[in-house]
Amino acid sequence: MQRLFGLTLVGMCTLAMASEAGAVTLQGRIRDFCAPSTDTCTQLSDFEGAVPGLVTGMVDSTLTNGVPTAGPNIAAGASSAENLARWYADSPGYNLGQNFSLELTETSPGVFSYSSSSFFPIDGELYGNQGRSHNYHFTLQLGGELSFDDPTSGPDYNFAFTGDDDLWVFVDGMLAMDLGGVHGAVSDSFSEETLKALGLAAGQTYSLDIFFAERHTSASNFNITTSLLIGPPPPQVPEPGTIALLALGLAGIGIARRSSA
Image (cartoon, rainbow, N blue to C red; front, side, top):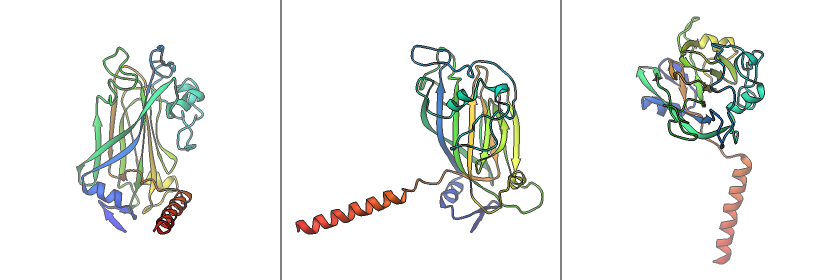
């Protein structure tokens, strides 16, 4: 068990390597949405539609199959639960997607940040800017891992976000930050005390899932600062059945070679 910056790292070599390099990289997928409708795609009214301001309760308090689903206040911030289901899924005719990574750099010991007041990462890509100065209509899904220490009874480490529009952060599949709606830049944060209230424990490793949406042509701010230890998602491990098939295949190659000899 190794301690980095007062936070507990449990058997996570990938996190240690990322921290030593002064950066961590979150990985996910970005999806471009059509606005306005053209011959090649269909506009969802959620994008370049109403401006309800900050809306909490748009999504459920837990993820379903790894993505947010409609909460009790969905109608205040989005057109429908059906359309929300398209935000973070590849939906032919409504969006185009590509893999995406975001690097947070160590701005001071133990503090990692990404900051942009002009967050337009797919300008000229996918559906393109559609006649505007930027490609304004997209969603972003990022994944990684998070762990924390708990040296005192009060908050010691935090995760802070400032931006627009919708932003939801889930830890271990549970909602830790709720900034839904089309709005100007707003700020929120949570600490290890927030995570303890969700039933999480120090010294353990949990999934971190971030869901963002840029839905209106005015500005796009995206700013994360965290002293909680975060890192990239774990490497994909082959299913046991796949490993068994691979082993059988290698054994077969060996037998064939001996037979031919």
